Length: 240
Image (tube, rainbow, N blue to C red; front, side):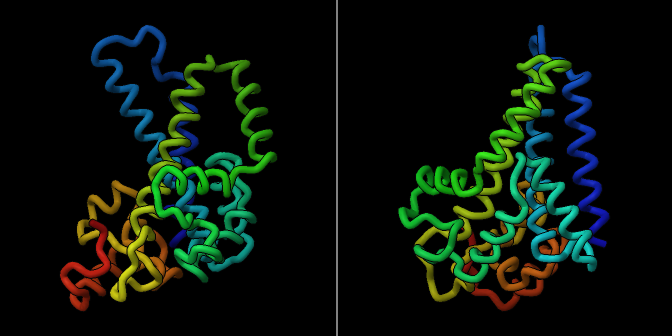
């Protein structure tokens, strides 16, 4: 079943991007037209987040029972997100699960515990020369057919929105210090609100549940959250 949402997200991301680059207005937009531009940018950003979440689920083997299908989908999603290396992403993510929020051993954690240095470290950790070459070549090729402002507005900016969303909801808020005894895997979790959890980051805010059950795909994390809710302390282990 994991293959279905994975393919849907990839198709929606690609389809919406092609449509915005080809047909969505940008030049000479006035008045309420800017609201539609903002809406499409936000939607593309949300779908970009979905690409990363899809690659993440592939790392945990929840897209398909087939290893090569997981790798294929994960590689495709990571590449489309921003030319990311799926292999590098997988290696770092497994280290993160083995040593969550460890100052020295977790590649996704920053010992300063401060937002901006941590975000800069997060971005640097996954940036590679190969990625910049891929994105640069793709950008300059697309400029042949698409005006450069549209590429920035409908492609590049949404990718940064996705990165910001993933870092904030899926890394900084769950794993920032202080860590307490009621935080399994040094991870906080959002309070129970499935709609906000889905809109914020595809249920990735249910982060304690993800660390306790990494083999559960993103679209089933709400079930794990509900199963744990009755046993949890009213305020323990929740994002604040």
